[in-house]
Image (cartoon, rainbow over all chains, first blue to last red; front, side, top):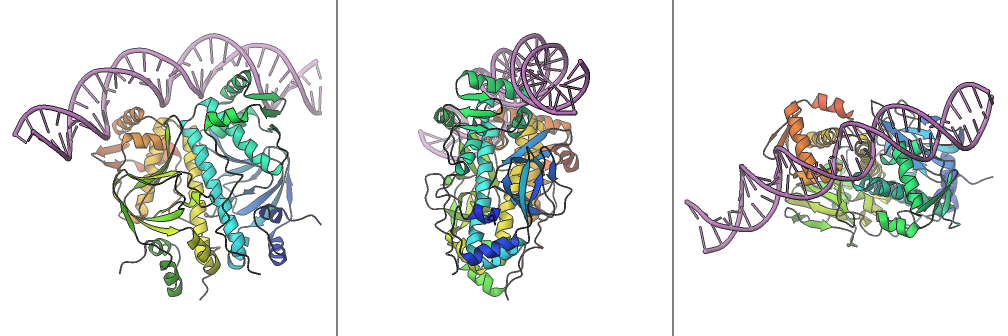
Length: 245
Length: 245
DNA sequence: CGGGTCGTTGACCGTGATCAAGTAACGTGG
DNA sequence: CCACGTTACTTGATCACGGTCAACGACCCG
């Protein structure tokens, strides 16, 4: 039997004993699959579940009344989706697939069990949640104070450094299953200007594009350009409570 | 003896029994006071404490290498400052006072105690942390997709709805101890354009300014303009674990 | 072949940045 | 009490980054 998504994700950071693993596995629901470009959940739902992404890309976004759209976060396999919503009765954003996706949902109430029985997992989930916050801070900085060129560089570096963790093969090339409208919505540009800027970046030799894949030919130069900090490689787990048993 | 800052803050949301209160109080350190416009902590510090704001405004920010600045979040009395940093070994942002400020610090390690002994407080802190995330999402939307006029409207509404909670007197007027450069850095504009935009908003009759105080004369119209959702009034606490004892 | 999506390119335009000068308020020291 | 420096806000002239609109081509799939 294949391991639970969530356990797999968490044991990347801390060692789980068997009792904890069993308990965690019991909280997870049956996995669900969605096609490309479909709505998963949104502001109208009352469900309030969290999802672990098993495969595929998806993203959360919000619309303004007049149709302007802001993509908030792009989610990859291994990510936990939905933290920002658990403080409220309803989701605050829309969740949509960028391609075919498999998700492992679990109910918000499962956290209750974790908080009472598994302090170490609690600390880990807490850290994962606040790390997301730090990542939003970096994004905010890019959105507020960077040029189009820098914004695109930032987005690519962010995606790249996340994918590096799971695809440990340290390739500079990755698949980017987003169209230019989606890229623009993620960093506050129009699809037209995304096209122009990416073409310019390619002519400068900073990136290379082949179909839907992209290569960062000078990741170091790009990183210097946008003053990039990788938030994914390290996490401070030293203060976590020890496992009971 | 005056009550602990943290307990005061938390008991707004859940009822603490005496044992829990005592335990919490023991985690807090001695309060500290800082003058206007001074640095409290930043990326060079290793300390990694959290702060409850007792009085005064302050803000977290990051700089780009060339001097551009982004104010990330403005903190008011009652706020807990520092969540985004606890996942890392060092702070990710700089913390600076906007005026004279009193803070109640406590060490990140205190969370360990809470996670093990006080599941209900754990759930509450978790919710407060992820609510911050939701607020960043709203801000991101404003930064990415709104005009200068809308951005300023959004900022004012956000500040106003936060102040309404503690100053329960439902006044439309509040003190804004930030200069226009700081306002601009908070929403991605220059001080010059902040000036022009606020003058325009005033001429439209949406706001009124007297010295350092500001009045939202048409909060409803402003809220419609920016499609504003108040994230501060409600929080879902129904799923919290019951208090032990 | 036809329609749809997506990326590209060009012409034009507007929002907000930049630069600079001027004013008001305030504190400090002679 | 005035001279002076500092900080903050305002206003105007000019500029440029990125938006808007539109046309076109590549590709895919039916």
